Amino acid sequence: MMAAPALIAVIGPVEPALLTAWIGHYRTLGIERFHLAFHFPEHVDDERRGRLETACRDLGIELPQLSSHGQDLESPAVGVT
Image 1: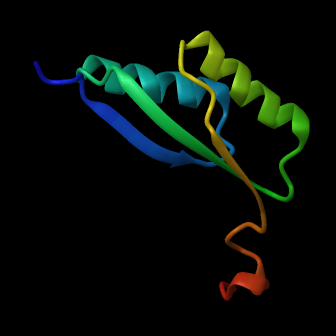
Image 2 (image 1 turned 90 degrees about the horizontal axis):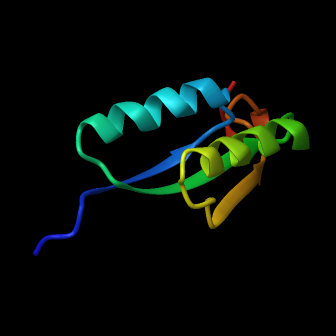
């Protein structure tokens, strides 16, 4: 018996409504397991992080085991101007 398909993704600081719609879309395609990691640039505050974690719980998604915090892609320190 084959395991249910899984989706693996790194997600930035999206609004919880977008995350909810995204999860719903993939569930309609038969995805049952989600393995997520969050990347939060430095400007993202704890409240916004908490809203995404709450959305995951509300959707029955296991909280990501990995959350990175740091520079965003517009930072000159990472070579993008």
